[in-house]
Length: 302
Image (tube, rainbow, N blue to C red; front, top):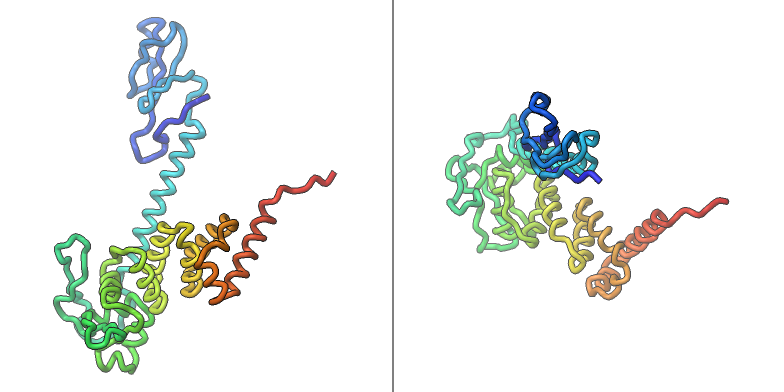
């Protein structure tokens, strides 16, 4: 069986190159494929191919890209496409949208890194609006920002700041159900499309992203929470995702739950869900039954 070459020939890495080794006489040396080493231990009169990457030898008639090598190259290509897509999405998010009618010198957004390596937002000039975590009362520290930046990232902020609303007149946006730390991180993301988060912070940011329709941040948080998904937190994330319309997280949590139905009723979070939202429990069992039907072997008609 032909072994896989670690690098596909159509990939951006150095291509897997091969060389025919012919050592019946010196004249045949001119027939060598350019760019590869000779194989001196092949039997006389035989053509041999040696991969420069994995050093595997195989016959000339098997030359070409094997299935495993081709699939590996395809997976790497798909990964690169995803990364490119994410970069394009980030660039689009950071681009200013239509800002007609917004007052102030807000297009000169002043922010810098704090030296800690996380690109933390700091409004240092021309800030014309502040955000306040209203639930923290007098302990809340106002987070300065620029109207143009907020409006370009969030249609909700845009509506607030373009119309005769209290936030526009006062220059203060009060944010409920959010900590000052989460609010700082939220505003920082609006400027940089980057955030250093743990699971708790990801949940808080997802709530803010849903409320203010910052879809790029919402997707970022969903992907992070999916990467941390396990059996112990599956039910909690399932309920949380449903509450905040996080479909990617919802589907991933539901899939994990239906794959472990034998352990479901033993979870304390499951019993809490039964009391809190029985409809979600019904949805779990409906999804489980649907999966069982779809995976059942078809019956012989004969």
